[in-house]
Length: 385
Length: 94
Image (cartoon, rainbow over all chains, first blue to last red; front, side, top):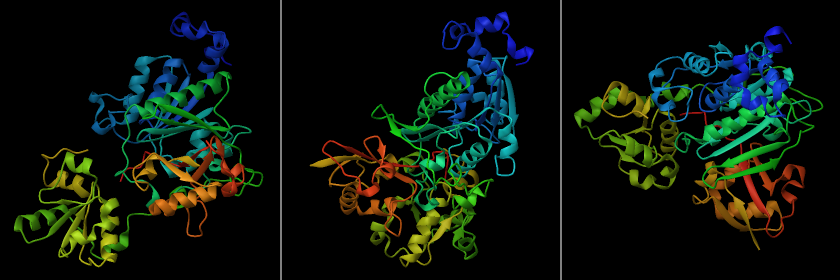
């Protein structure tokens, strides 16, 4: 422990007094926090409360990995950023807010996308890793890197009204692969059609992640190891499910087969957007669509988003059949061979076009970029979501 | 006696939008068989082409993962709650 972390200034004593008067934390615990370093992966929904609380609690060095900019659609849940920050890099916005809350904290910003090439270097500079990115490739990457480096990984995930949280890759504890050896193939991942998240949910889950990080640093209580917490906001219920280290786990098991980082996009089955379909002329641009609608040439415009999305904005003249119900409603499309299909950004509608072509609608085409591209390039009066 | 099976949010769309379904069965396997007979769209989300439970879907009897019990042969008693808990990721936007 160097001089900077061996004592607290009078101002720091005042700042941390509510910690210092508890025997479980006390001066020892507060100095451990000051000497500690935590890496937050992502400054989004989960990363916001994690970084805010760890900063306020006095964790000495907080690293943040992010390469995104603040968007209006982030503000409903990413509380480290404010309205004036829209358009700024999330790293800058997060650093400013943390420094405002606690200038004693050193904030280290990493303006990169975490990858197999940089993860080991990046993570090795920290004591504890908090994963707030919430996508499968990064989750497996962070998990494997933490196991390889022997660093605790405080994991959280959120979906609509439900969250999952646990602590992985501790000395004798399980890792994420012990819980879920493989990710779902992309086709079975719920798309943004079923997505969305209650803005408060990452607050609950991120705050639990921050709590676990602080407990690990101070060395108090019972960590969320060998347990897997699920939270249901609608029923307001926490459940604590049992989890065990899997002796056959490919990363942390007795005979690991993964001893260095792999290609996680490939592992998760993520491939660049179906190039074959584009080259076969299955796509049209929003400009093409505009010209055809203006010419009133009889093209049928199918919207495969969800009703809630249709409520927010729609392209005039479109017919709504959500992707999930499309296989049962093909009869409604009879006679509409000349059809353009769209969704929000073009991914769901590409699935719909594939399905339609297999069902005999051989001229169905996908609107590239979806309604977002339409708003960007044709009708900017519609709201974006 | 039917047991409660808790359906996770991402799969509710394949189970009549319900969050709890009552299903009968003496073992977890029987119970899931009856569940997927009732809601056929669930089958491909729970089982792979070889008829095995998918590796990103865990099934619990009360708080215990059936992988540490007798897997699908795990017996189910009156009052046991069965939970289906798949891996989820909210950070993916399409």
